[in-house]
Image (cartoon, rainbow, N blue to C red):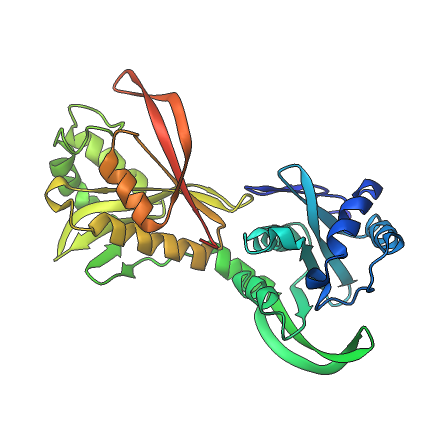
Length: 346
C-alpha cells in the first residue's frame, strides 16, 4: 500500500516502519504471559520468534508504536483485498503501557490514514471474546460488533472463538465530521451563535472584570462584538442559553484531524459566574467532541491568575500540563498561559 504514509504522528506517538533493531523490544514484551494470553503467538516466545515477526513486518503495511522514544507495540494491516476494498487491522501494546489510551490513539490514526489515503471501504478486526480491553479499543474507534465465529481458531492447541468488529468508510466519515448543532444539559441549551446575539455579547464584554484575563479589545466596541459573532457562525461554537437568555458561549478551535486534538474556549457573563454553568457547558461539549469527532485530546489555555477558570477546567477533568511563559501579549503586556488537557480515556 504505497499510498499510505510511512510515518504517522499523533499527539503522543510516532508510528513508523518496523526495523530489525526492534527485535529486542518485541522479544521483551512478548514474553509476558499476560500480554500473550489471547493472542495466537508461540509460548514460550523465543527471540527467533521476534526476529521472524519483525522480518515479516518489513514488507507489510505495519507501523511500530513509539512512545517517549521507546518502541512499545505496533499496528498492522493484513489481508488487504484490493478487489473488495477491505482490510484487516491488528494491534498490540506492551502490557506496561496498557490502560493509557495508546492503542486507541494509534489505531485511530491508522484507520484515519487508510480512509484518507486509500480507496478501501471496510476495515475489520478480530479479538478473543474474553479480551474485554481489546473490545473497548474497537468500540472507541467506532467499530461495530458484527458477529462471533465459534471455535474458528486454535490458541496453543485449544479451540477458541473470535469476535469480529468492523468500521465502514461511511461510519468513519460520519463520526469525524459532525458535532450536534444543539446540546441540551440539565439546565442549559447550547445552540449555534446568531447575529442576533451581538447585543448580548457587546453588553457583557464591556465589563472590565469579565475581560480582566482575556485578550480582547478594551474598550470593547459593538463592532468588536459583531466581528466576534460573525467569526463563530462558521465555527463549531455554541451560545449558552440559561432560562431563555444567552449568557456566554463555548468555542472549539484548532481542530487537528491528523493529531486528533482540539482546543476549547468558553465564557460566561459575570452575573452568572460561580453557579457551575461554565463547568456544565464545557463538560457537555467535551463529551460531544469525544463521541462525535473521535478526538483523543481536548485542551484549553487560561491565564495562571484566572483561578476561577482553572477550577472549571479541573472540574471538567482536565490536568494541568504546564505554563508557557510570556507567550502572548494582553493589551500590550506579556502574559503567561496555563495549559490544561483531558484525554479520551480520562
